Length: 285
Image 1 (cartoon, rainbow, N blue to C red):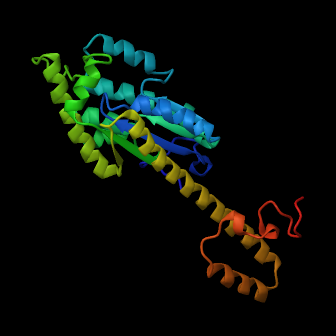
Image 2 (cartoon, rainbow, N blue to C red):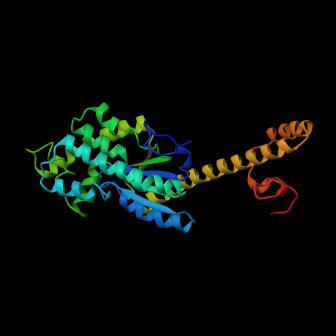
Image 3 (cartoon, rainbow, N blue to C red):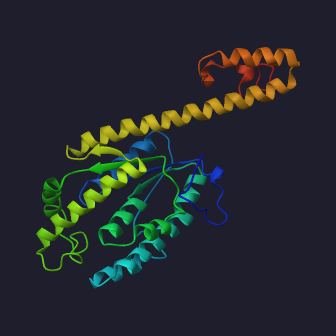
């Protein structure tokens, strides 16, 4: 059953959100975007509809966040409120509709990055969590973890150091390299705490991206396989319930006892006349 972290957006019905919400988390340079770019086409090849989303992609707040960060003078509370606006807008207008349509939603970061960044900057923990009580609990959170020593060369040889990713608002007296190392160490410590609190699945992101991709594929296949079995079991239970209502009570009781004594059923092992698509006489209508 789909859940939130405490509150529900107006008009949202959790029972309608049948898709899967998969979060790829991690610090800057951990390889999140690389993995999402690999996972999306792979899932689509398997026949799944996929939406990918991430921070600052909201039409409502995304451009405002980018412009505000250009001046290097964005306060921690204003920054938190900007990101919360971006998140809730995407939740209501992208994530929830996609889940309602049965999509797999891949999100590059989620509320955990926003909480970690705010906590490192000294924002009140209860307040920052209260902003995200409407967030949906994901079906899986894969935390790509890599140490600072490995993050540094990745950042240097890709996009270089950034004012905000280096935490220069926290360490203004340091040079950008030292600030980056200190900030990322603080973020890693916060992510490790959040991992325990929210039950992340930690993935070693230090190997080659193809190895990380293989690890993620195996975990996601396990998640989807479990969901499919659960769905089929519910279908079987509902079908048997409908059939037993039509049976003689003594026959129904015997049938229920028989089913209860069997291993967990899968649709391929259910006689055709009991399938959800059958009409009860061995033929499909």
